[in-house]
Length: 119
Image 1 (tube, rainbow, N blue to C red):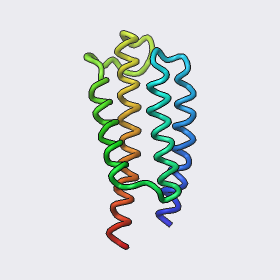
Image 2: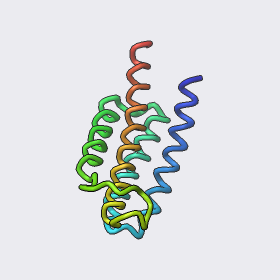
Image 3: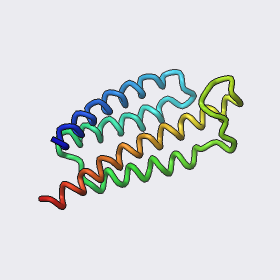
Image 4: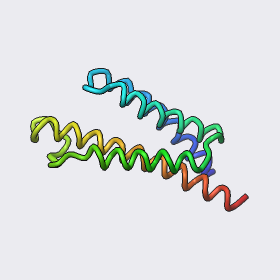
């Protein structure tokens, strides 16, 4: 049952990542975010079809965490436009998106790791 729930969530996340990529059309650097969310969608689908190696999930999660740390604004001013400098808000949103995506990749990795122990 647990596997079916996680796979259903992975399908949902794949759809959400594709939507997120599509919403980047007016971003200053849309190609970067097409790639980021495209990779996340692909990894989600690999998980659904039992084709995701544990090491790939871990490496991608670490890359997304590193990206989030690198893109974290010098001064975090929230996520709402009008709440501060637009550049800081944009960087905060991007970093947070990378952290969320990394968390999802780690969930896949822990699931894969646990699955290997029981087999």
